[in-house]
Length: 541
Image 1 (cartoon, helix red, strand yellow):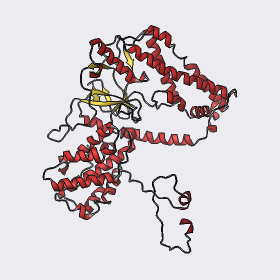
Image 2 (tube, helix red, strand yellow):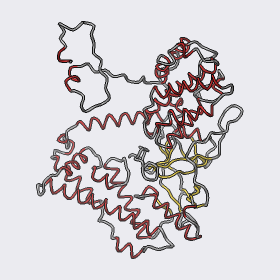
Image 3 (cartoon, rainbow, N blue to C red):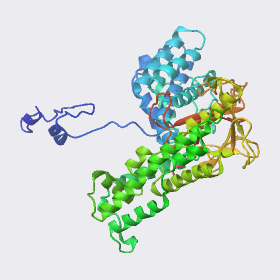
């Protein structure tokens, strides 16, 4: 059809619009000859809210002006559009905003608006409990696959769909900048009010700390740098900064340097004689399993680098796997072959090697000096086995079913322990993101300005016959002013890396997720949930 169009015979006002989902069979000729257009969602809270109000169904006067309770309807209508904008804009903060970035659509908001209007028209009393369930669990929550993201979604929605929203002085942000329009405004008055909102927004509207802007800028910079590195050819490596050496010489020296630092695999037979599998000591089993995993990685790294050096000298053929290693070493990244055999890590090559050597040293010290009094929690390849080992020791000591046990978490003021606790284990090495542990008040506190991560104290994981800490959202009690009350603690998720996102495993959790840890706090849980506060096993550098 397109090829038969001729400017001489076609009407001057004729246009053919074609829309399509991404498709591998879409004709390339049409793409080459056509003018491509895309409808990007508006960026920023103000433009996003305005976009919702000038689109159906709100732009339809019959729909917008036909509710039996106009004051409540218009407050809730603005509140829902604002909530929709916050959910979308929070994605720009990466894992701090959402573990998985979800594509919330205009359709999600439309069905929520219609349900809100229906509830106002058909019931005398406010139906916030029903609306929070429908919107949070079904309309928006139906897209959410991560339970920590679902916890945030329901927590945030509780701020926008509550009885205080009908108060003209109620603000969506602590600074009071964002409020719903007062009285019963018309559609044009609401649009005019929206245009008076700030063009750019501070992290506070999302419940985030001011440091979140730094995290956001860092992510954008890293993405830009990775893109530039990806377009750079492998032959561009080396350069004049290496004293006139060829690329092959630089790579050979780097491979030799790493090889000289990585020790030989552990002698498992000798270790098993010293630490045999015993019913009374599950940590021997944990050590044996860790050695198997680390030996596999050691052998992979050593064989890859040895073969690379041979290939650089022309003794063997440079295979596609070795070319991948060359490209990775040139850009300072961990080769894909190593990453497949390794523990989760986002570190570049240099810090990855240093971290790997520290893990091997931790295990070697364990072998040489006996079971440590304090365990470096990030040093384990499979940390779940370590935690299960700690519970099994307690269960076998007191003949209690291990399935009935969970860890109670104690934050310790001391930094060193010479002997292990009577029950449980001491662990150290975790980091807090979007929060810090205050060693004076011994509770979770706000981050210091421009300090993105902070070290957590030594923790005592004490096995107890108690139900595990709940990571799901439970509506908080509020005082007379509507401020949520503190329950005295925050249930923080622990992740392997700052990406937080992983694949769904057979346990029902993300492969990046480790466990929940209960941290004392005088602030309500909702404060830290909106902050995106979590503990990390390792940093990115």
